[in-house]
Image (cartoon, rainbow, N blue to C red; front, side, top):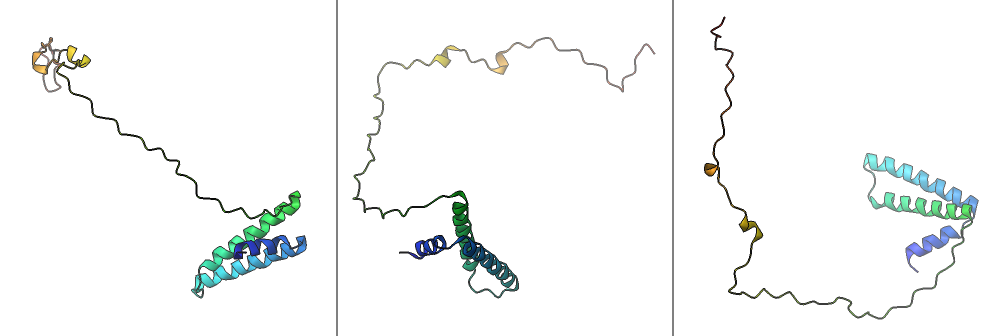
Length: 137
C-alpha cells in the first residue's frame, strides 16, 4: 500500500470525535507553520501542502460520515493488456491535376474600376471662412 492509501485508511478508521480532534490539531500545526514560514524557520516548504491535504482528507471523511456515505473497498484493478493502437492513418490528399482548360473565376466577371476612371461629380460649394467679410455688411 502507498502512503496515501494508508493515510486515507487511517482517517476512515477514526471515529467522529477523533476526526474532529485530528482536524483541530492539523489546523493548529498549519497555523504554527505559517508563523515559522514568516520568520524563515521552515526548512521544508512542502509541509504546508501536506498539512492542507490532510485537513481536506479528514474533512471529506467527516462529511461522508454526516451524510451516511459508506465507501466500499474497491478491489485492485487487474493489469490491462496493452491495447492495439486506435489511431487511423490517412493518406494525404493528392495535388490537383493541371489541365489546359482555363479556370473560371466568378470575380473576374466584375470589372475593376480604378479611381482615375471614375468621373468626378459636381464639387460642393465651399462655405465662406470666418476670416472672409461679407460684402453685404
